[in-house]
Amino acid sequence: MKTLFAITLAVLTFVSCTSQQPSKDVEKKNKLILYYSQTGATKTVAEEIKNQLEADIEAIEVETAYDGDFNQTIERCQKEMASGETPALKPIKANIADYDTIFIGYPIWFGTYAMPIAALVKAEQFEGKTIVPFCTFGSGGLQSSTNDLKTALPKANIVEGYGVRGIRLDAVPDEVNRFLIEWGHKEGEIEALPAFMEEKPVTDTEKEIFNQACSDYQFPLGTPVTVATRETSSSTDYLFTATSKGQQGEDQTSHIYVTVSKNEPNAKPVFTQVVR
Ligand SMILES: Cc1cc2nc3c(=O)[nH]c(=O)nc-3n(C[C@H](O)[C@H](O)[C@H](O)COP(=O)(O)O)c2cc1C
Image (cartoon, rainbow, N blue to C red; front, side, top):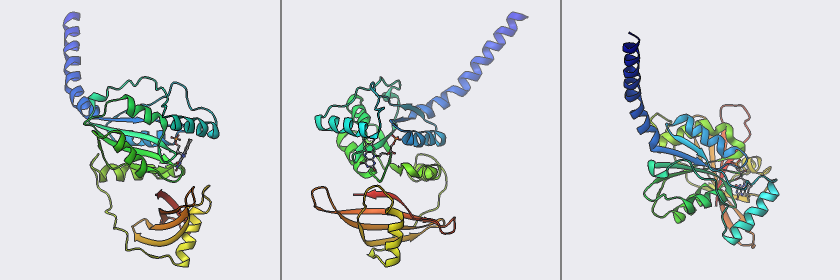
């Protein structure tokens, strides 16, 4: 009797494993989230993507961590960038070959992906993979880092990415949901956002909105010249074109996205991203 019970249990266990495992495996194996995060912002985004998708996730770690203060990291990073030397990484457990789509996450360092990602793209084989960049930043860098990934990985398909300021992590769950649906990574419905209207010279009121959004940022973001606006159900959005002087005194143009929430009265304007 005991033997019959053991055999039945073994058969049932086998059946239940084989009936559940394969479909889960196929879904899960397809997508991988690989990310580096020094101070936790990018980790928050990576985990949110993982919450909303069937995907495996792995943090990239460097052998000698960037664990000093901000200035030490800046100094080490500048040295590495100047010499072209990338940091040694701890071995990655995931087998990249098992995945079709790889979300690669990083903080922006000096306008591009952080040095551990420079090491990752050098060391691993991403040919034929779909790469979805995501990043966190003080002011911006999604576009420039995406372009740099395209240069570094010419045989990969680098698609539209997601970027958010490190001080706007509260917005991440909703924005990641929109991003994943909009670009076909998961199913769902989202409000279709209207395009920005045509650019017009900024009015004094719009200059004030720009100043409220940008004046407490640690670096000056320039003088707004023109603006395009759009209305959504939850916000009024502004796309400012601003001019400033670059490091060598050259004229620079930046596009600065500012949003004002309609969900709270007298909401402070915040800038969401600078694109140079
Ligand atoms: C070395 C270094 C360079 C940085 N360079 C930029 C930059 O060029 N542009 C920017 O917007 N933020 C820059 N930042 C800010 C980080 O991108 C931002 O704090 C990010 O959210 C940190 O992500 P993490 O918490 O995942 O490490 C820099 C930070 C460091 C440490």
